Image 1: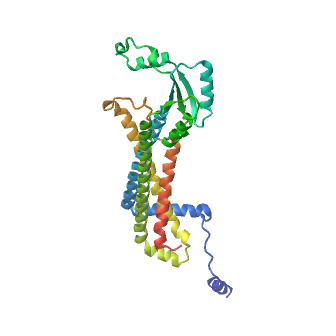
Image 2: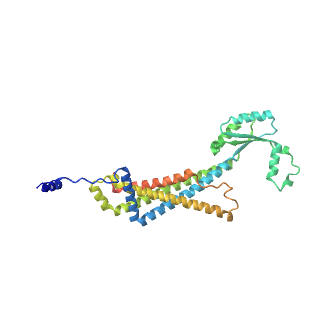
Image 3: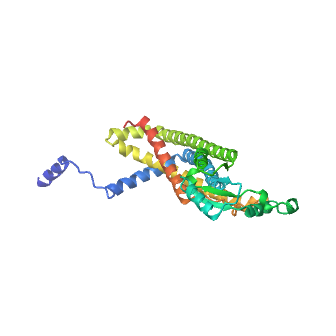
Length: 322
């Protein structure tokens, strides 16, 4: 009798859900990652296409960035040649040189001021005509004017800054003739601004393309599992619990695409360095050609992860309301 009562009591008593060994934050995170990996294994072809497209998009962007970074480095070197030259009709005494150096050095944007005497100007002229020195036979230093060569700071090498600097320079008493290669400076800065604009447009286009690709890939995955997601929602699964594996899947896709893009870019860069001598007249290494800085590489990888996450999030909003 007692045994029958115990069985009856046990049958009436509600069963407790057994405690999972993996419960808690780490357990949930492990489950989310396992579900994301299962999603990838179930849709291998779609994920391979997505990662390949992300890789291609980021490779194009990073390749353009590599060219742009090296152009910026070259531009910084070339911009040091942007000099403002003040010519005089007579040799300056030491006192006059000191006075002019002080006045010019007080102008905002002045980095360095150097005096070039007539003899020094003739030496430079001969150096430029090396091998044809006979053309300068009988030419005396008196025919060349002495000058002050002014190197500008990096922040004052744009067209407008140079023009404003020259205008201030001409207001100094004793300064009459000033030259700075207006046309060269204008063309140089126009080229740099064009490259920056082109980079921004290409980068924006690639960002939109990657978001579209990742978003539609996740949509296909969600659509294929819509019945399962509905059941999970009906049994009480939270929206975050349903979304998390797909978000992790997008992060994995973006990260994998970014890493592959960086690996391919490094391979292209090394291949270019080893074969450049056969079709270029200069050595790229000695010319200052360099790979992307570490902060740029990390930025591209983080950007890939972020794009994968945003792409997943945007597609989930259409299927799972926030």
